[in-house]
Image 1: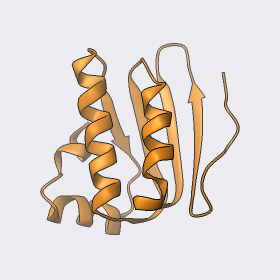
Image 2: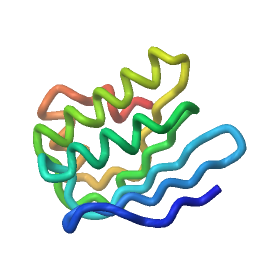
Image 3: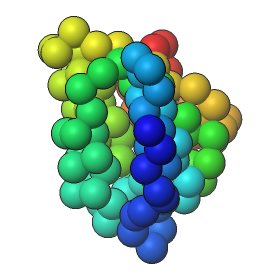
Image 4: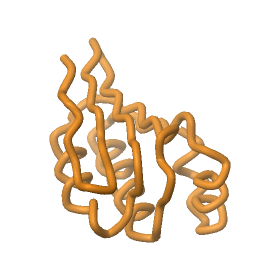
Length: 105
């Protein structure tokens, strides 16, 4: 099942449900302005998630927190949360914030 891209002015998400995994692709900026939208999107996911950050151009502390909470929520439910495709600047920002665990999958 494929859901159309929707989102805020600065962020677009494409959510594709595969047989046993949900692929969530980010494009744009993940910040406080998109917190509620991203949180609501992940609240609907009840399967392992592969999160493609390849289209992400910016992330702030709020965006990092949203990803961390989504990872922990899915792991509490027994699902995996893997990040792929993070651009170097996004990887660096996550690592400098002490959130390298998001990249570990």
